[in-house]
Image 1: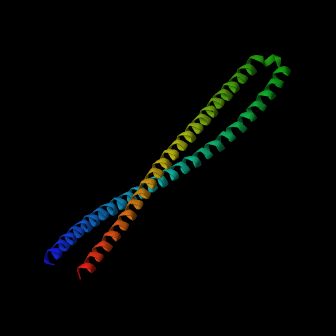
Image 2 (image 1 turned 90 degrees about the vertical axis):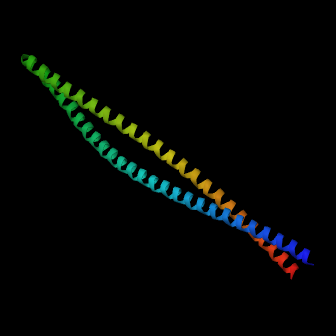
Image 3 (image 1 turned 60 degrees about the vertical axis):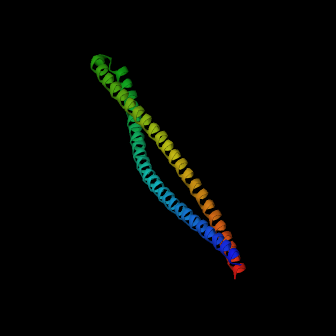
Length: 178
């Protein structure tokens, strides 16, 4: 009976060591889960900052688009002015040199404004593409962190179940010993 009690005591000690090891493993997994949760929160904050930055960029792009529309209206006005000047040119052939120089200056201004509008539109399109790429990369990174966090939760649940099973075995061994 003493030998059986000693075997049960050894088995009980083994189970207790296993429980301690599982408890330590569970604590490590909990720390990792906490770290991953913190990492996910950091990523979420970074994403929020990026979104706010992109929203600011969008507001700036909207302002630039408004400026583009204003410049286009000015250009349309200049085109109308150019048409009016051309009519005046037909009726004022005697002042052709003066009118021709003026018309060329208007055309140069119009070209410069067209170039400026084109550059603004190119910048706007480039900014939108860059913002979309950044959002996609951050969403992918956040998705990976969420998947890893879910895996850690599943592993923690498995360890909890294993720990419960071991405790039942220890209790059963203790009951048999009594």
